[in-house]
Image (tube, rainbow over all chains, first blue to last red; front, side, top):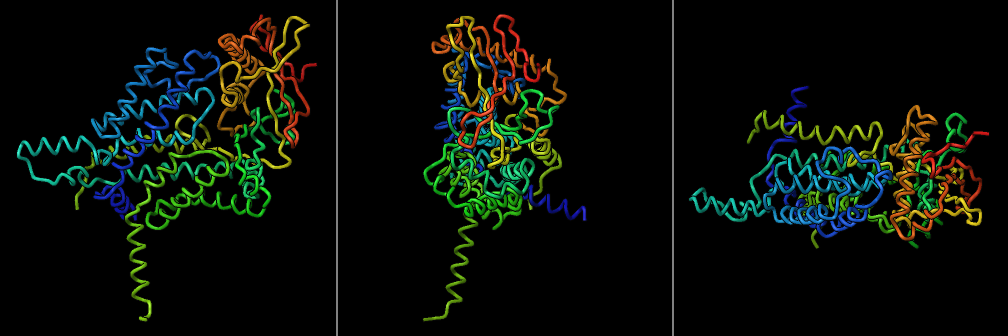
Length: 346
Length: 179
């Protein structure tokens, strides 16, 4: 039994795969970071350079990454230039692994800095983790300048002839890295479901919480906190109330405010959210479950975007990249073929 | 079928462990420490019966002619939402031992006062760095911390004064419950 399990694990993690999205994932994520994430985070780093350190608590990563935080103006300009150059290197695949390592570490530094001031950017957390992880896993140098240079060098030395395209794609690689990225995505979504059960129980599915946020009642000019109605005095010694959690601000859209009028729809949406998050581990089975859950994930994230104006772009990108589109299209093509064969002749 | 060496498998195991173990720990404990998270967004139940609150920092002045006024965090060059989350998670503390953003087990009044003293000292320093913030800092005697209960329309209800920070003494004195 044990040997059989190890055999299955060995097969799932180490049998090389020729087709994988890791090169494309590197290019897309680096492009996103260069166009969107990096300019935003650098602006924040610039703004906090003179802020009072008593108003922050350095995150653990800031203590181990050997860079000062906040940075002085000169250090900031050097850091910005280096990060932009590293981002371009990751995008085109030049010194790919080293670039991924330092670029990922730089992004982790920026995210850790922002979280030290009280803002944990959940979308960026997964993105940074995945980009840093890509420095350590096989397959991420596919579609890179490194491969082109290596191909040219081998050709000049009269090495084995390989087509330019197959050199660009790179050799088949063990899939454990890709599976680890999928596992991290799954784990984060599963954690969101577990958190809802932990703090609210199944009551979360009654639609009330969703209604509160969709109505935009957590927005406004001040940040809101919540607590239970009755708190023992020994717990509420700070203020006599007993504050338990902070609420998330969400500027709702006009469509969201219309949706709030329909409690049944809110119940269904809340239940589907819980089912999707808690069912995410099924995506690890691959095939249809993986496709269905990742597609569900994308629809869920785009719904959040349209209803609550909260953008989880890195999650959407990762989910899109983790769907095996070729497998999915083949299945559809096969289905259409079978349907045509089974159809009675006119 | 191509096979991979044991050394390579051990390397893969180490990488998988290094990335997975902290994330699983964050989910189980639960906690948030960048970039690992238990994803607590929107997880707390909010219904009609949920008590909701806000903090208010009130600047108090030595001159009686100058009335107390609420400090707008945005005026001192910081974002209100970030400062309030930091204040609640890392300074004030949640009553829930499972709160991922900050709970101080075995917290004492002295430790609470020390954390708030540091925070409000930082706030007074930050005020002086911005033109708009200087209007609060001039003649500032202290800062009063209030927690306000909100009604269903987000209007202020019952107000509890938690304590006062003295600029001169650089010390926050917890006042709630002291008669």
